[in-house]
Structure formats: structure tokens, C-alpha cells
Length: 184
Length: 158
Ligand code: SF4
Image (cartoon, each protein chain N blue to C red):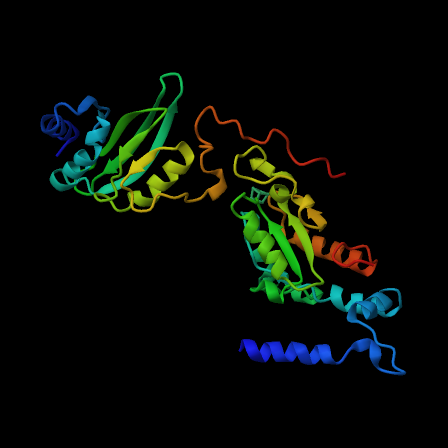
């Protein structure tokens, strides 16, 4: 296996990008940067804001409200908000409860596993400020220094309507190109 | 068997180890046990007195007395009595024999008591932290002189 891999990479090296005569080569990030400044980004953002799939990863009692939001009664599909089981399918991570010192590494790992573009919502007083557990020996303070949080949803726990409103606010931010998930 | 006969049976079996035994009510009895005899007492309770359900293992910190007490709540399916068995340990090196060979469910109770109070359970099969992260080991957060609490909440977001 190792040999085959080595061969492939050497093949790529044999065709240098900048030596094709008459052709201007580019990179994906250059294309992205070009698109971000053009009108096409509005269309892309329209698509992104209408497919905010979130990761089902309940962390505290707020997680129960998050699950309830994903159920049929609230019909979040009409906003394109669909619960997913895997971080690799998800666009939005909801920090739904207290972050303990033991859980923080796992949370960071889930965040790294999510493909960009991705967004974080802070749901509930616990994730915003520690909530009832702000003086505990086992909780982490100031989550907003570790994740680029777009929307804070206060409440203990916030009702599903509040969570849906948080999603709508996130959609507004994406539409206005003010979200932290993408660099404009 | 009622509460009084249980206490009498215990005290006659271990006259040196059992002290300050008391019948609180029909359904509650309590006793102190010498730390080195705790495991044998549990074995006797399980084999001879049908105390086959260990409800909890926990610790209590008494910094002024320089002691940590380990508390076992043991109940029985045969007779309606809950026994509270306590052992006093020195605070600077609290060590007691693990009761996992007697009550297998003590495993996680002892792990949690260990990580929160620093109580060493000798001959425990797998004594490592249960719910706290590894790096908090040695802080013993439920001891009364613990000072690692954060003294501020998140900064003002507005
Ligand atoms: S904010 Fe309230 S409901 Fe939400 S996780 Fe914290 S304690 Fe539970």
C-alpha cells in the first residue's frame, strides 16, 4: 500500500502547475476568494442558510429540548433544519448544556470533525455563562473563547421555539454575511 | 431478624472492631467499624445476615478532626433494615481495603469516592477516575479545603 501511495504523490509532483504554457492556473482557495467578493456568494449563502443540518449531541437538560425541536411536532424541516447523527453530516453544532472539563476535549474533537462551512449555537444559560453550575469545580467557563459562537439562546432551558428563533437569527446572519463560520 | 438482633449479632462476632453501634429506628441501624476489619465485616454481613445489597459508598471530610470517614449503606432483601457502616481514616493518608470482592457493585462507587476525596481503596481491581478528567486527579474536589472553584462567571457578553 505504502509504495502505491508514494508513486501517486510523485506523479503529481511530475506535472508542475505553473509550467503549462498559455494557461493561468489557480487554486481552490483563490476561486473561493474570488466568489466571496462576487454576487455568486449571495446565491451560495441562500443555499447554505436553507440547509442548516444540526448535530444531535445533547449535553445537558437543554439537550432534551433540542431533541424535541428535531421531532415532527415543530417541523423544522420547513427551514431546512434537520437533525443528523454524525458530525460529518452536520453544519451546525449546538452546545446544549454544561461543558465539563472531561467533555471539552470530546466537544473540540466533534467540532474538528465537522466539515466547513460550520456554525455553533450556544443554547441555554449553562453554555453561555455556566448557568446554575458557574461555580463548580468541573465546568468550563467562557466557551465563546474556544468556539466562534454565532447565536446565544438564553433560557433554562430555552423552549424549542426559542431554538428555532436562534436558527432563524443564524439564517439572517448568513444572509447578511455577518456569520463567524465563513471569512468574507 | 429485626434491627436489634442484627446489631447484637454484629457486635458479638466482632467485639473489638464494632463500636458506637446504635439502633436509630426499626429500619435504620448504624455502627462504626475499625478500618482494617471493614472487609471482613461486609463478608460476614453478606454471608450470615443476608445483607446482600450495597446501596452506596461515600466519604465525609472532617478537617478539624483530621479524619475522613468512609460510609457504606448496606441493605437487605430479607429484612427491612438499612445498615450504615462507617470507618474513620486519618486525613493525610486515608486507606481502606476495597470491598469489591464482597460486593461487586462497589467498583464504581469506590472509584468515584477515590477521585473526589482521595480515599485509597487497597486491592481495588481498577482504581482510576470515573467521572473527573485524569488531570484533576490529586485535587480531591469534595474535600472541604478544596479551593479550585472558579470565582467568576463568564464575562459580560453585551
Ligand atoms: S441551561 Fe438549564 S436546562 Fe440547560 S443544561 Fe443548563 S441547567 Fe439544564
